Amino acid sequence: MTKTVQISKEEQERNLRFIEEGRRHVARLEEALGRAPYAAVITFGCQMNARDSEKLSGILQSLGYRMTEEEDAADFVIFNTCTVRENADDRLYGRVGRLRGIKAKKPHMRIAVCGCMTQELSAVEKLRESYTHVDLIFGTFNLHRFAELIVTMFESDRQVVDIWREAGEVTEDLPVLRKHFFKSGVNIMYGCDNFCSFCIVPYVRGRERSRASADILAEVRALVEDGVKEVMLLGQNVNSYGNGVSGELSFPELLREVCRIEGVERVRFMSSHPKDLSEELIAVMRDEAKCARHLHLALQSGSDRILREMNRHYTKADFLHLVRRIREEIPDMAITTDIIVGYPGETDADVQDTIDVIEAASFDNAFTFVYSKRTGTRAAALERIPEGMTKEEYRRTVQDRFDRVLRAVQDKARTQSSRFVGQSAEVLVEGVNAKDPSLLTGRMSNNLLVHFPGSAALTGQMVRVRLERSMGFYYLGQTDPVSAGI
Ligand code: SF4
Image: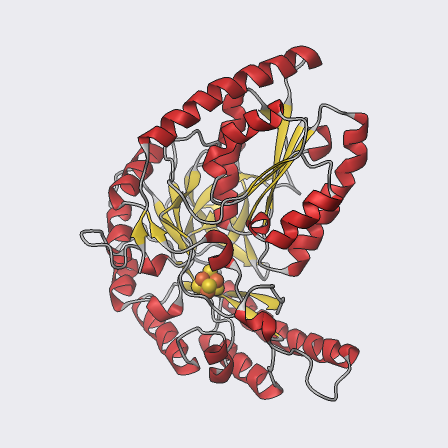
């Protein structure tokens, strides 16, 4: 059962006070440097983290920092971390460690680490002991107190560590610096109650809390006023939005309301758990033309036995039934997924079940991962290497299974992604193509990218593009102002 998030006016006022105080510190730094100080927010992980980083950047900017993407050039570097997979942790330590030498030459430099990884005690211990050049460590539950934490950091001569063990009050209306002026994420809920056996998220993001729908709708209206055309409703499992909160909208109702806000042109959402995806939601996606033709539906495994062990609460047959219903109602819907290979105890037969689902579901794309053990989760206690197999033999077996799954995904996805050749699509222009400045890059409703000739002035506009050539996972096209299409 979820609960609603309380918005505290006192928290809000407290923050504004600390933003004022922080401004004075940053102004003094600017005076000492003889130039404006720069900050870089480095984001790892998912869309939720990307949205959190926009909030961190908004606070940094209102304190007087200029933003840069170059961590070496920054006077303050903030790493917003992810801990879903072990290699994300390793990459983080590498990046933070590299700054030690730069900070030695630039003593005024400040470094902070926050996000999911810092909710884990072992990670905080490691940062405290081995990364003493880090000035500030905080978690996911006190991100809204960033201005206060910065003030404490400026006023302290040692490492500041402030990790909350559970969610407190959430402050709204803090400054946000959006990465794109024309699209934005909107948090509709925080945390997760599902406890999938492999997943660390419920431990580092806490239990499910839904925001009040009136606040979400007000935020979307304000974003539209500010030039946003596309919103993405964000939650770990948006389908359980508002569950058990009396008087609150359900997710399908909320989605319909957001789609009907004047000025919104496209609405996406992420992520959606297959066990909770209702017929009502399928009907809203079908009937609301602004609802993007893209659904990310994490499969994880096609084996009933592994799904049970993962605590996913659906079977292979349930999943395929759901995909069939979505495709019956919305034939142009692109469906993408997540797949884990190498879950403890997985056999060749289990992997074959996963490949069967990939073939039957015809995913438009899939993120395929090798299972990563996360300390504290239920699966972490399970033995991975079968009896009689060496570590190296096991590694090779998993790699071979991964390659088979990836091949199945890519074969299907290539065919699926190219099914729109010759059609015309509405494309939200994201900007000039990074590799070829004569082209623009835009995103279709089904989330595929299209590159086409055009003027940079079209950035942030919806334009019609004829899809001339499929390049596997993207298209080349030409603007097409007249024809109708997808
Ligand atoms: S639904 Fe499962 S995989 Fe997704 S965040 Fe929650 S626990 Fe993790």
